[in-house]
Length: 69
Image 1 (cartoon, rainbow, N blue to C red):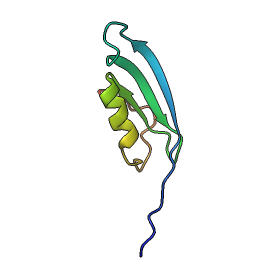
Image 2: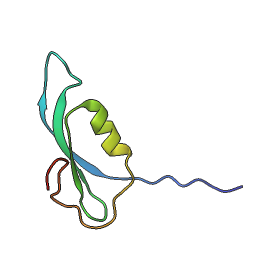
Image 3: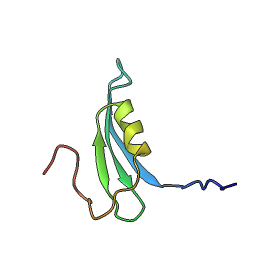
Image 4: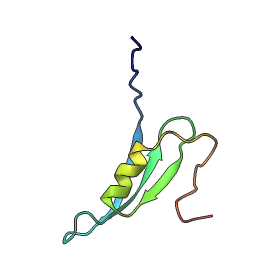
């Protein structure tokens, strides 16, 4: 029987704005503390959850935010 391994990831989550009338509207940035320190922005609680579920990216994505070139 194969044993499933749990992978632990570390992040810094910065929250810049939360709409008090609509708490799902939240803006911020997530920085991965593993391999390359990739950063991703989010504008909704669902996007934050999606960023945290993503597998770690390969290569250097530091400083490249969603929507920027």
